[in-house]
Image (cartoon, rainbow, N blue to C red; front, side, top):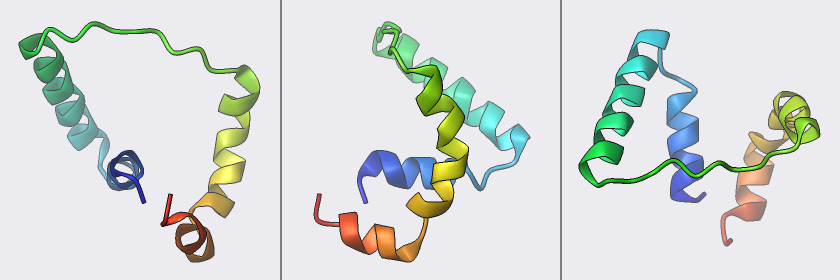
Length: 69
């Protein structure tokens, strides 16, 4: 599991209030290190399918299969 995957997994367990605090902290870090927003183009199809595909992505078998990448 990559660092990003691990962070996303943790974020999914947070309450809305905790997510707001995390977002605020990220904003602070971006300001502190002068990181500019770079738009990322994501297709509508990938956004719409993410929730349904997540059921498969989050299975232990998938974690095992992809852990070496």
